[in-house]
Length: 116
Image (cartoon, rainbow, N blue to C red; front, top):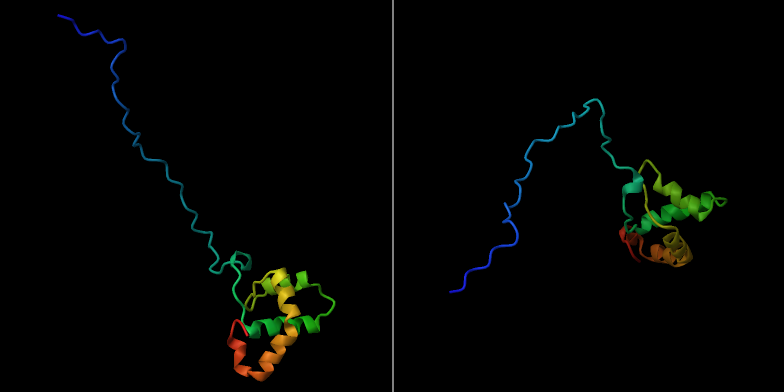
């Protein structure tokens, strides 16, 4: 009768248990207050209403020496309500400015819309 071969390696003891020692907690400094408002740079851009775009165009009329990049930065950093938009969006809307003016002149309640 054949006999079973002897094992060539030792049997494993199994995995070790997880280390469950509590980590040291870091005390929180209660003297530092976080700001309630988020900075303007943290906001994503939104679709602006036609009234917002007319505000931008009026500002560009008052400041003809400013570049479009400066206008974008100025409206992004305003304290009374930042308008977030890209330079490419401004240039596209600037090209369509006469058509927007005609649309607003014919339908005054379109100012609250986001597209004409």
